[in-house]
Amino acid sequence: MTQSPNRLVATVFGAVYLLVGLLGFTVTGGVPFVGQEGNPLIVFEVNPLHNIVHLLIGAALLASSRRVSSAKGMNTTVGAVYLLVGIVGLFIIGSSANILALNGADNVLHLGSALILLAVGLGADKGTARARTV
Image (tube, rainbow, N blue to C red; front, side):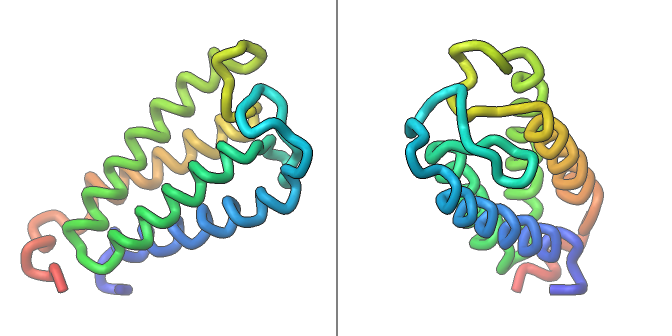
C-alpha cells in the first residue's frame, strides 16, 4: 500500500471518515434525523444523516483501497463531491436546504478533504495504475 499514494490516502481517509461517522452517533441522541441543527462533534455539527453519509464515504474509500485504479477513481470522485459540498455549504448554512447540519468548520473540512483527494486522485500514480492493480 505504501507504494501507491492513492491506496494510502483512500485507506487513511476511509478509516477517518468511518470513525467520525461512528463517533457521531455518540452525540446525536435526541437530534432529528435530518435537519439544520445537530450536536457538536468537536467543532463540527452532526445529525444522524450526516453520520450515515460519513459511514458510506468511509466504507467506499476503504473498499476502493485494494487496487490502485479503484482508489484513484474513488479519491477523485469523493474529492469532486466534497468540493461541491464545500462550495454549496457556504451558501446553505442557516437555510432549510441544510439537511446535514453543516457549519463553517464542516465547510473547511470538506474543502480541505476535496483538495487532498483531488490532488492525489488526479496527480499521483500516473501511468502506473495498470501495472500495480493488485
